[in-house]
Length: 112
Ligand code: 5GP
Ligand code: ZN
Image (tube, rainbow, N blue to C red; front, top):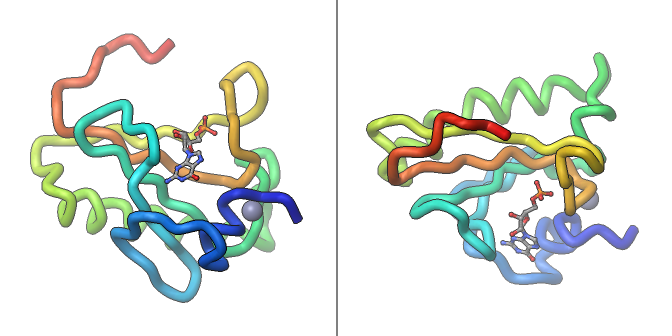
């Protein structure tokens, strides 16, 4: 499968990892939009939020238990934003489910 994040998981493309376990990988975004910009992804290929279902939602729940720990470890002690883009209108560019952890400065109120 021609998926850039699956290649990162496989180690075929290098990444700046900040957290890894058997089900989840977190790494720095290559083009950070905020002082701290981390991507958290499931190791299994799920294309987007549209593909989350009762059979694979455990890993999503697990991701959300890890996000606060990853954020704290990255120094985000004054809050952060968690974003996932789904589909064309949201400008999802990588079709592998990922959660952006963004922070390190005051973020704009406007979400779009
Ligand atoms: P999306 O627009 O799909 O929500 O976000 C995709 C994100 O993946 C973008 O913020 C982009 O900078 C990041 N990205 C794309 N390719 C790579 C890569 O090869 N390595 C890393 N670390 N981030 C990537
Ligand atoms: Zn993938």
